[in-house]
Length: 188
Image (cartoon, rainbow, N blue to C red; front, side, top):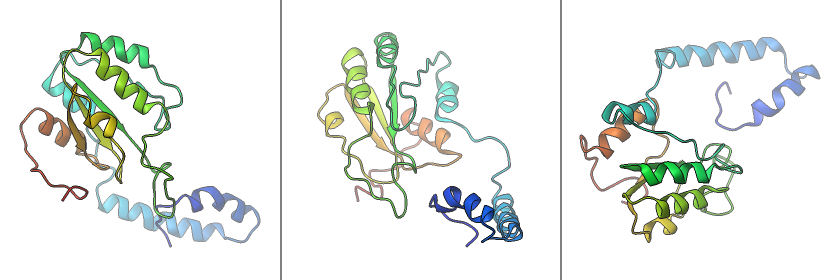
């Protein structure tokens, strides 16, 4: 198989080649096929638009703080995010998962956002005087009851893994240029 979504080849290919159980020519063939497909799909045709750059096209004085160091969010700059939120006219929090947390052949043990993400959400929402929009970037459902019952969090958007046009699409939804309707794959 030339293309896979699991991490098995990434983790074990080098060892198999070193033991001479897999010829390099077979890897070369798989890579040729993979990159041929990627080129045909246009995956090398320019940069994707991030959520930040798309939001900045609507609001020029956008202030950004990473908040979490990664999806696992073991080191969060919560105090810095709180200070920014106190001064902000609007707050958009992007939280969620990636393929280290959820993927084919790898189940999560719970639906809770990992690491300090929940602390970051509640701390920022508590600090701001403005409504908060929570955006969830993940493939499956997550428990957002802490946000659902928080009066400061006025919108929760589950966007999946939106792809290269996702930043633009999300900004258009947040700023009212597009209304995708009330249904998505989890709610309807």
